[in-house]
Length: 154
Image (tube, rainbow, N blue to C red; front, top):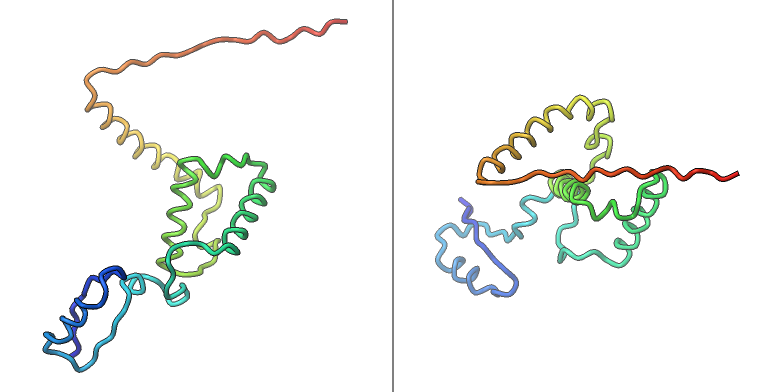
């Protein structure tokens, strides 16, 4: 029976821990070394990388973002927003989990999203209420002002 022990390994630690396990292990019929990231990555994902984008990949994603902003008439600052960063992070996680899948299988239609808004609002409202319950005192203020429309002189 092959060994099913999961060993933690980091490049900086070297191979001494693995060698010690191999010596002590009683089931040495078959030994396979797999990086922990490979256990969770799909077959279509690259088997090993250091987590940094290549210059070509960085240029490609930058070009894609510029086209996204231009086509959808969005400011470049959209990529710095907390909501966009959370979405991008989740999309990257899904890519790592499932590999290269069609975008239409992940992103939903505007109609589906509009039906889902109330559920998200309800959950977020509960989170906000819990946060406010933990605060002894807080204040709310508004800053109301109007700007007169300039009058045209003839």
